[in-house]
Image 1 (cartoon, rainbow, N blue to C red):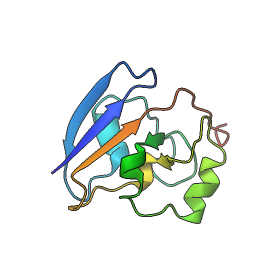
Image 2: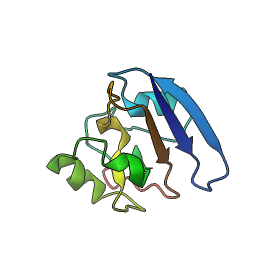
Image 3: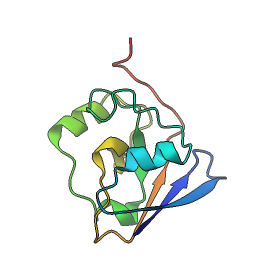
Image 4: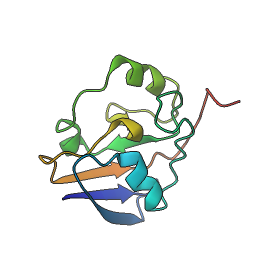
Length: 111
């Protein structure tokens, strides 16, 4: 079981949920009521599930693929620890994961 901590953009609200290996971070966030749209339903065609991964946890995740990096170029409030929640799956090795919801969302793919 992985403990996932979601920190609100303002840093004031923290929510903890449990996840199992194979769970997608986007689905856990949505089930917890986090404001991650996931407009493309995990197809990497938008950036509405952009999160900031805690620096200590970032290195524990597999590297982002080029397509994910390209989508992050379209997101608002990107930093070096940005990832798309739809591309993060929990693993047995990951005991905990902390992510912050960015303060701004900008979906340049939206119509």
